[in-house]
Image (cartoon, rainbow, N blue to C red; front, side):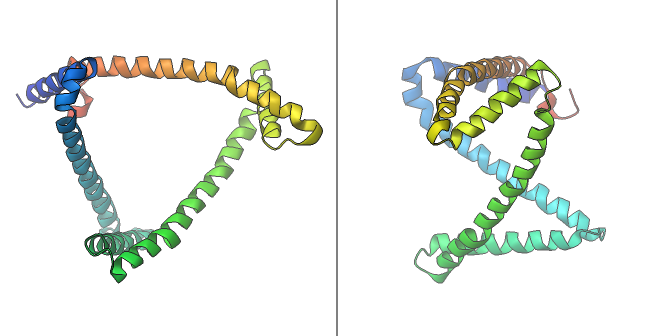
Length: 208
């Protein structure tokens, strides 16, 4: 029963979701309760993620891992940010709200910018490997990528590259993206049907 009950609940809610999508009348009556349930489930997901984070770093500290310093930094940042954010939320005009805003603006935003800047080097490395024109497909990708990059900064006589870039983005790129999205959509539908019918049960644990 421990296995069957979650499958039955999943099937029932999947049917309800299908009905809500196909019936505007049902949407008007039940869309708000469904959104409330989604918010509640998201809250549990945040709690599970927080518990997993705490357990992971607690284990590293207990085992005296060589990178335990970063675990202490993580815990410190977690406690400080959570405390000032919660207090600042309930006291909008206090120093806590200003402190929380400053933490976000002067620490969180620069850290995000640094992370994306580092990712740019990885993307450049991947692009270099992908643009090696060993086949005609790689050569086409190389030429198209070069034209698009040139078209984004084109001026004067090079404006022809901007026009070619617009055509590449509007016609071939749009067609390719639509094909990819159709494939992704079909995969999502197939996975949803498997979960709905109980064929796919990996979410229950045990790899079934």
